[in-house]
Amino acid sequence: MSDAREPGLLVDDVSVGYGPVRALRGVTLEVPSGSVVAVLGGNGAGKTTLLRAVSRTLGFHGGAVTSGTVDFGGRRIGGMSADRVVAAGVCQVPEGRRVFARMTVADNLRAGALGSHGSRAAKAAALRRVHELFPVLADRAQQRAGLLSGGEQQMLAVGRALMAAPKLLLLDEPSLGLAPLMAARIADTIREINAQGVSVLLVEQNAALALRLASHAYVLEVGEITLHGRADELAGSDEVRRRYLGVVDETAASDAAAATGGSAHTPTLSRWGGTR
Ligand code: ATP
Image (cartoon, rainbow, N blue to C red; front, side, top):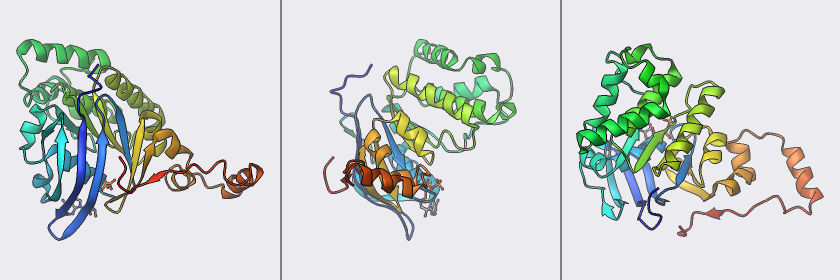
């Protein structure tokens, strides 16, 4: 397990633009060492942009951090090149499980270890760990990655990132497009990876899954953090339930509130106002 006193990820007042498009405005969030933190938000809210700002890959997409700082493990990583960020222990699993379709599963995993500065023994240990987490990747080692199912490709994308032995995993919508059972399996694996000491920053449109996994969550709307708090608090908030958990029965909710004196079921969330 990681040392809980070790500083985690700190994104402080970060704004991002893609040319004239302002995609993030003054975003502040924290992923304490050893935790799972979720960022919820609809299409175009800026979730992927936030991960790119941390992994220093914005430049590949025509974007740039225009203000603010990103620190990890007590070091300023905003300013490093993307490969230095990987070497510092931060790995992103991109949305859409971008595996190298024509390469074998084994070569995809080998490619994941290229960015790490680990010894040969460390890389072999990382591969063993990935195979333990995802036995199917060992069974299919010589198969072309493009032939795997969607869920298996997601496993490969996560496994490839784990080959660099990250301390922080950035996961971009790992459940997207997966059947509920496969999404649940991926969620179990994320839990297991975290139990092995890897911190996780998870961005998801599937708020129900994200709030089950995370201890804390942030809501991102049109480039700004509008709510944050403990995941269980957010899961109980009317606003999150209505907007992100698809709870539409407002009459029942207001009846329940009336029956309990009107306020017992309305948890107060810390609206973003400077508290962390
Ligand atoms: P989704 O869930 O749909 O992927 P998201 O929350 O991840 O959405 P982003 O992809 O970060 O959102 O996009 C945030 C904003 O930045 C959107 O307005 C989007 O159009 C814009 N944007 C994203 N990538 C680029 C780019 N490469 N060039 C210009 N604008 C971009």
